[in-house]
Image (cartoon, rainbow, N blue to C red; front, side, top):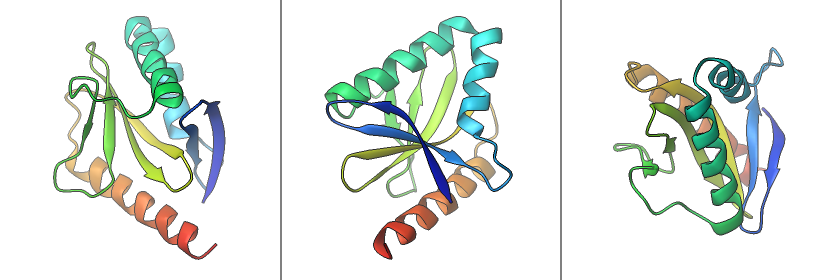
Length: 126
């Protein structure tokens, strides 16, 4: 699985998942938000910049762990935009996917957790 560097900050470098077909789900989602929901797009972009420069967002209304999953989190805009992410060693944050509030999440979280597990295994094996 490949990663694409999106943002470099003082605390974290933020990468996005590149799927085998070459698509980058989180960027596709952000492009959609930029057109259809500019306030949510701006809010999420500001959260990503703040996270990269200052470290983990402590406000649970803006970022929180996903219950029932280890090392799986979401950034949240008050307008309803969501981005799933995880951490890797050496100050790496990986954006896995984006979705609007109200989307059924069970399958989405399961798929994101599988991607996260694959990334962690790849990191351990070099």
